[in-house]
Length: 312
Ligand SMILES: [Zn+2]
Image (cartoon, rainbow, N blue to C red; front, side, top):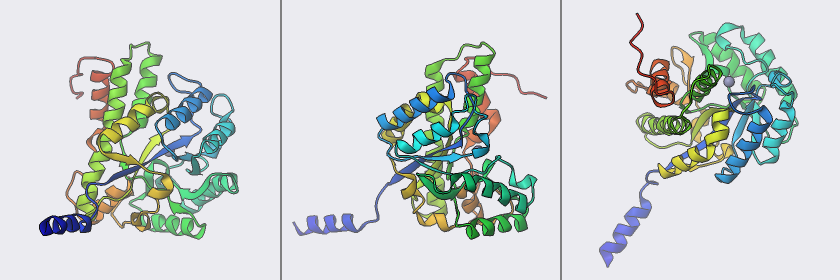
């Protein structure tokens, strides 16, 4: 009996075992029409899917400069609908520029323009997500100027730790539909789901090597038609793989939110940068973010096209 109690105590004292937690975020809102839906239809489906899947709170990163350009001019209403459904909104810049392509001052002015739209709105959070996850690349002075500028504005880095380049699958799908190709919808669903779950598991492994623990992960997705189609399948697959879906608020309360890695080129997920800073050996990014591989998988599994010979 005593050994049993001792074993139980040991079990309780052990650090939380395998704990995979992930928050969902959607970028570039409001996005243009995709392959299947009008923007309004997409929003209705995405909200319904998140509700059906039991996702209490996702974050939607807004590009206010896109409002009115989103093929139907209903962008503002769609954003309000996400908030009314319990989700939160944050800053993804006004015009979605590359920091590496402009000055820190111009960049921060663009952030301010987005903040002017966001501030005071219901559901708004003080988070900023760098477009293209571009934090200035090799230019450390610029990187630091923007980091300081965001801090002075009370904005926190709306980082991601998990990236599966969902935008590329969306774009390949739209191109295929436009070209009149036959899209295998079950194949598309499986590719999307397996790629996003694979990206999360890659991040889980890399996190353990980098931080020796399992932080709350944040996946960057986009407001796409494939999300509207397959979000329920995606959440189901995450749970079957041992993941708990948490709120964006909970994810950004993780201690990693305080990190600002100092690496030779700042571009990518917070996890990649932190792993690089700590000298964790490559690969530090998920293989399906390589477009050659991603495009080949799409051709094979969604279009059932024979693999192309390598280009010279
Ligand atoms: Zn973006």
